[in-house]
Amino acid sequence: MVIDKQKAALSSVFAAIFLTSMKIVVGIFTGSLGILSEALHSALDLCAAVITFFAVRFSDIPADAKHHYGHGKIESFSALIETVLLFITCGWIIYEAVEKLFFGNGVELVGIQWGVLTMTISIIVDASRVKVLKQAAKEHGSQALEADALHFSSDVWSSSVVIGGLVFVWIGDYFNIPVLKYADSIAALGVALLVIKVSIKLGKETIEVLLDTAPNGMKEMIEKEISKITGVLQINEIRIRPSGAVRYININVGIDPNQSQRTVHTMVHEIRETISVKIPRCDIVVSTFPVDALGSDDSSRVKGIMTKNAKTLNND
Image (tube, rainbow, N blue to C red; front, side, top):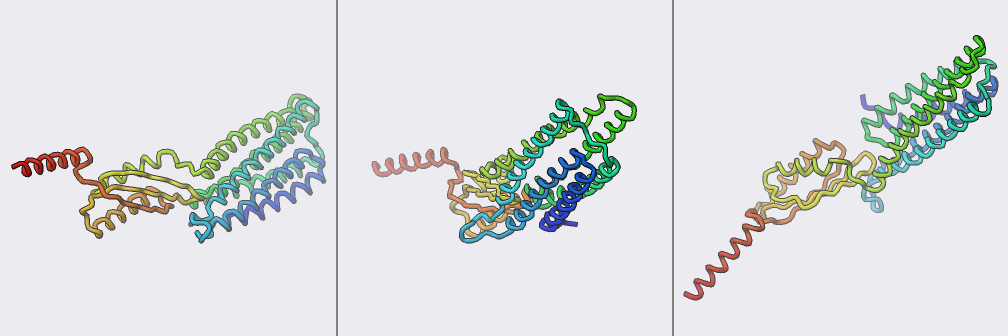
């Protein structure tokens, strides 16, 4: 079943509102700095979810007189903003981890059962959102939904770290093992580094789309497929412009000028069909130019022979 991307984005907004509210209430009640930090994390997720919802909503608006290539790049711009929010989240996680490691601000133990329950609910909700968002992102080729899925994934990891921190600190206090109070901070640093690594990759992909960078290997693949089509004598130019989930492709091919209009039309249709099979979401424009079927070298040679024969006949 195909997931509607606007519904997926809107449900993420409601999920983020629920998680943020729950963590704020429980964090204040328990006095847990870890849970309050997670509330901030979820608040950033809420901002990202709202941005994603509006991005996927407006990206589906068709092309108009001013936007000839549609509005798909709104999704890429949204993904870039979300990547920045992810870096802010990682900065906050690193700051909290360093505070706990070097300044002795340990995890609060007041109402630990409520803290564990809150984080467990958070993980369940976040994991369900990640599954839906990843599936929708794959089906629609949406960078915005992919970025939103990454936000909720980072929330799963950080919530797990908070639970681990609460449990390990409790074990350390119960069995008098002081070193365990640093377990959550070390794990949090690991999570932050992992999220930064994934965010850099997502950010790079997003910037490439905004700069109209052709996907790796796509031009070569198109050229290979077109060269197999009967009647294509030369491939002069292939341009690819990503915009949201759509690839706008301009192809310029050389054909025999003696071909009929019907034959040329059939050839162009075959080119479009061939590429559409390989690249499902694409908009293809094919232009043609005349090329001598003998090739440029042979053509020059033939013209030279004809000129020489003409001179010979005139002399005779």
